[in-house]
Image (cartoon, rainbow, N blue to C red; front, side):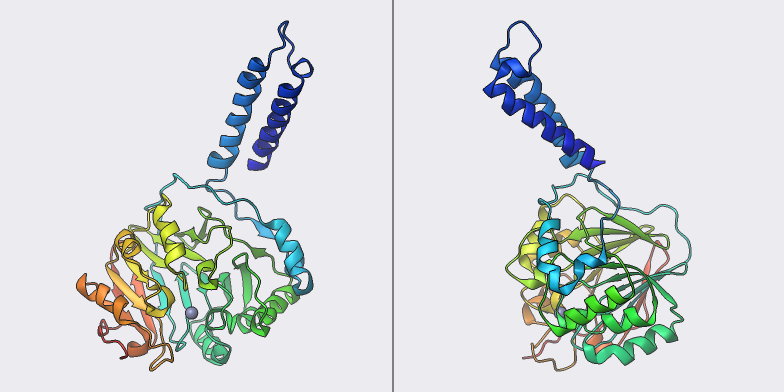
Amino acid sequence: MDILFSFMAFLFLSLFILGLLEPKYVIWTKNKKRLKVLKYYGSLFLIFFLTSTYIFPLGGEIQKIPVKDFNVSSLLLSLKDKIKKDTPVLSEDVHVSEDYSGKLRVHFIDVGQADSILIENNGETMLIDAGNNSDSKLLLSYLRKNNIKKLNYVVGTHPHEDHIGSLDTVINNFKIGNVLLPNIIHTTKTYRDVISAIKNKNIKVTKPKIGNTFKVGDSTCVILAPRDKKYHNLNDYSIVIKVIFGNTSYIFTGDSEKDSEEEMVRNRISLKSNVLKVGHHGSRSSTSDAFLNEVSPQYAVISCGRKNDYKHPHRETVEKLRLKGIPLYRTDESGTIISTSDGNSIEFNVSPGSYNYPK
Ligand SMILES: [Zn+2]
């Protein structure tokens, strides 16, 4: 729908410019004055421009890019063509998914120094990230053990190995509904393997857009980041999703850092969530004060490896959570963590972990 309005805006902009140059071609009144052009075509352009920019992109259908555009050899060219202007700031605010049944189960799978999160409700599933390349066996057996046959949504938050490492194996071994990847190309073999797996299965890739929503069972998932722009840091391309189930919500941040966090804070979609999957394995480069205050979580979860090379989680992050009295669950201490929501309250299968950090 926004295409129609964009076209009308373009049409009136053209008439506006033409009218300013030669008013006689576009004004059908006796006095062919530039002032009228300014008034008529200027306001028509503004109306359609604002409609196409601010009204119709809201809650729009998820945009799909055919897999052929992700052909690695032509990636750069074809994706460049697909890059649209920045998504505007949204006024829509989603708090509650009203009709819901069953329980929402969120598995923070212990994949060491990496992320992999399985979300289930009423037979529908989403997998956010798939650990390192070396986690493929572990991940396959975990998903099979949990009787997963199909993943309705598979999200590769951003192209680092600790997030998309085993995504190719997952895609090859399960029925896959939708694959969401950010609009950034990476040159690694790991990334190419993922793209090949997607191509071989003839799946379409969805490029997320801020404000897009989709359902996993009765939960409503809202895309909060990234914006369709260039970032300095690959981590800031992370797809951030808020999952709302009844009166409860979770926010999954990938490795997004301060730049993206700042944008999310400025955006008018509420970040407030009961559970925060802490960004970038608890690194000090994420979880800025403003972002943490906006999310204002009741619980925090960090996915990181025991004695990892990056010394995650960092003192700064852990201290922020401790000072706010937010219980912290961590895969390096508890292994796989399962959180369950009945739509009103949230439970964890383990006790909170410590506020310790590697020195
Ligand atoms: Zn990571």
